[in-house]
Image 1 (cartoon, rainbow, N blue to C red):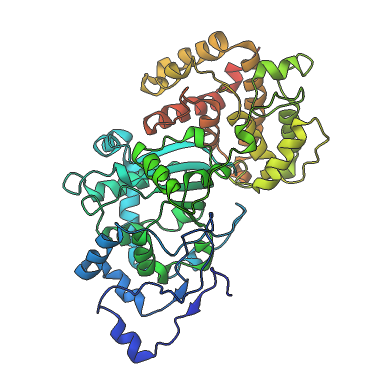
Image 2 (cartoon, rainbow, N blue to C red):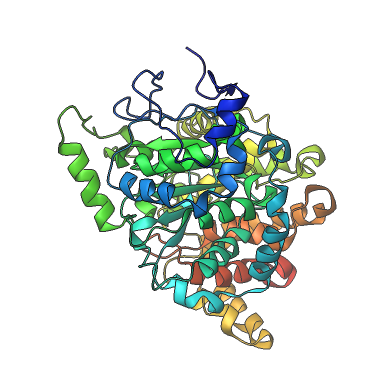
Length: 494
């Protein structure tokens, strides 16, 4: 059986057949004779075969005006996906997407215009779209990548939503993260004929999201896929490469996401939860079993991940700075590592991350060999603290910093850091910021300016007690973190 990510020419179609295939109706769906490819659960999903039929390119660009295809999409919304799969991935894919994604030059002018508008916009410009909660930004996944969640069930009726503005809003959100590795999660349940965007809009969106957006997208999780996904996939497949196909992961049940995503940080809409419970009660469905991480175990004395600073201090000779931070910072302070382009933006192999975390937690000797792996360990340590380094108590004041006049920000930030932040938290924050100042000094080589580092570290230093990161809080948190970095000499003098 061929790899599901291998592209072949469509079989059994000569030139005359190909010519008549365009514009006569919706693309045919894979039949019962197609080779099945296993999904995450190895149950009812199989991936559409990645065959390239160049006659479909013309069909795809006009697909939005085909009433028969739109009708089929409406019907597909009511079905369950019979063909889907998961692509194997380790979070370290690096490819030339300009070549991999095929000829989409027709969308460049459109994409440039939309991207320009999104870049010049502010959060206030999208309040009418943001109020629906369609898009959420949560913590980092198991690979150290920012996670952006899109929920179809929160899409309002097409009569209420301006789809052009929705596209600009999506670009505005992604613009804050496309310079680093990130993941997308799409909860498909809840899409129906009343809130389904027209296929022409989907095609417009795909063309608008050019290489800038696709380059660092490392995983696209399609949760609870249906035949609608298959039909859209068939339309777009001439423009989808094998390499990009490897980023697509079909997820049939929510418990399958636990290995990859911080489920405690994701607010899953109640309709999606109810739909998942319904799927799980059907015959021959897998039963979710508690994972090791879900079971309670008393932490080891050498534990460094997932505990409090007080616990670390009590078991580290009174030092709140854990060995993992000291060793990673020492390793990354060497010029060759410090000058690594995209330091802290790139993800790392999740198996190696978990392996080294376990070694640190057991007090074992750890040998670091790769800069991006050490960088992910630092972010993971901060993200897995029981309480954020800037504490829950200071969250509300921190998110107000951006709204204050610039002349007054310094006074508030100094008060938060020097007076209100607990001493142990201050010690660890000072240690991290002083190191990040070294990273900034080499920004001509590593491309990590204070603004870029703020985007990476802000959500790992500060989050709300419910662990949700609202879009309205992202800007203020990044502004606060950027201020820390740019004014570290004045803030960390004790």
